[in-house]
Length: 412
Image (cartoon, one colour):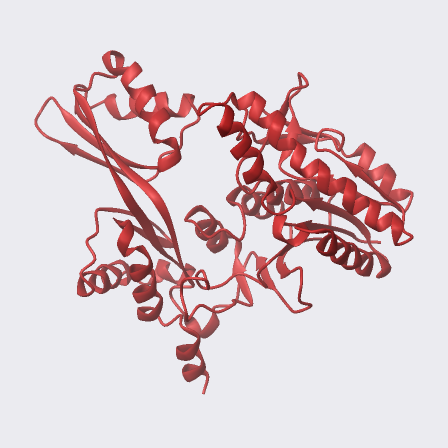
């Protein structure tokens, strides 16, 4: 008997009717003779509503109390879904993250899973029950409730699949797979039949909201087969695996983009040898993630350092740096808001060194100014003005022959 882990996102469980639909999808898998563990998110906009309530009380809520508050959203979903399965005549049981044995590090609002104690889930599966687990949450060894950050339910599902040695993990969403770009904004975007772990990891890190990066990382590390599928339509999704077929020999497989990027520049770092490490060590200790980094030496003794960061982390990053200004030894900080990051991703880029040049040429031809650049073996990212984000993504999507019409023409 195979173990299948299914994950249903917030839009998939956004109403009683949708929860009943999810229950029927679960029973279809169970009736195939498989053991099933289901991970769910909070219903619809529940998390946003809870955040809004907290903001009515304070603009700087305690991270611990936010974890206590936000973890209640998934608890509503697991109980209602379990009731739906019981009403349909099938045994099921719901667990919060900590009841399911999910242990995390002691970091509020963005914790990482450190261990999963599977005994309770395994016992219930052996008794024939469907196990429903609240995603996005866990507990520290000292008993503190934690949440896993944005997209944490994806991570919960894949981590459970790894811990239980599941045969497959299906991620059910309101879209029917992974697209070459976000179809809500890019008209020619089309569904990919498959994509590699590495490509998906880059896309997830670069703004593609279909899967959380940590979930893809877990899947890659433990070789868990993933399929992104529609919770509403019974159609083939996108398989995420170690080696994806190179469709039409395309060098670039996807275009990702994200807004609310800020460029922060630290001026006058006095020690060129240790200044760089000191700044990023200080930010890392406060769990602040930076992205694109540019260092420029102004003279023999001083260095300027620029990096990109998400808008929601800006105030905290500035406060941390200013608090440690004397120790870090810089003169002042400036920042530029209203920026966005646009990226191209594809394993074929490894053997095609001209891809970056083509990307910048396309952007220049469309009067889009590039302000920062970052590259890896399979991606190139450019920071541009936020007002040009969608335009940049669209022209790159077309230039690298990702549009559906172009692919059809090649096939013919």
